[in-house]
Image 1: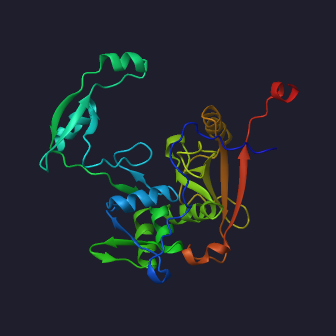
Image 2: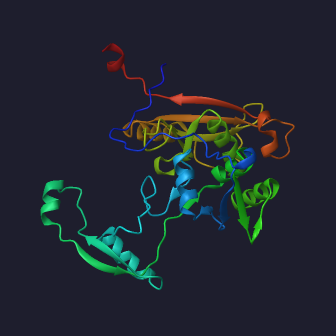
Image 3: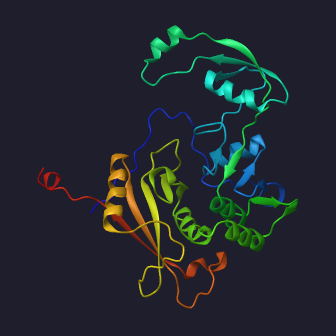
Length: 296
């Protein structure tokens, strides 16, 4: 069975950058990005740091942009759609600025028709909302512990690796198992993003979402050394009908379903970021076999 080639996106204007956000300062010291743990994820607020973290490895998700963060030049007027401006009215109380508000677009309307009917108008925006970057626990710990380029602050203290690991493990009982798989695919040079949109644990991209569509939807399955499934941290049903349904979803979205079986060593009492080499990961890809395609 041959694996499908990643599908490249057309008309991408972004330039390729380094695969990891490693920036050397004087004396070959690695620059430390600054992140704040807010109880749910790790957020980065500095514009330049956000730009580097996204462009160098595509870590995190910006709160105002669909793909690459949109940093507005202070000399230019920000353009908002009506629905965006209406939402911002509820977040008043900050500095005011002038914005240009245009009509909402309908996906059924052709672009030429939309441009004919557009009626832009200036409004005052007092929301003072700013582009931030939110990183999941796995990617934040990867940058802090493996790459050594991120400081994570919690309760006004910069946490060490052990403190971050214990804190994240307490907040999410699936974090440790997720990180084993996240680290495995990052080490294989995949860009790993959340897979909840397609019913999985992770999505795997070549180089990053702006350049390629996701190649795989990854679901995690935990086993012991006797290859017996461990259901302590229940994720999803792994019966054949559920998996076939998920596989059909992946097919209709142009992706492949990849089952990552994590085999836990029997003598291992606790999962730690220090013993990742002790884990074995088996990969199973699913494809429907169609007689018509086989005979064509």
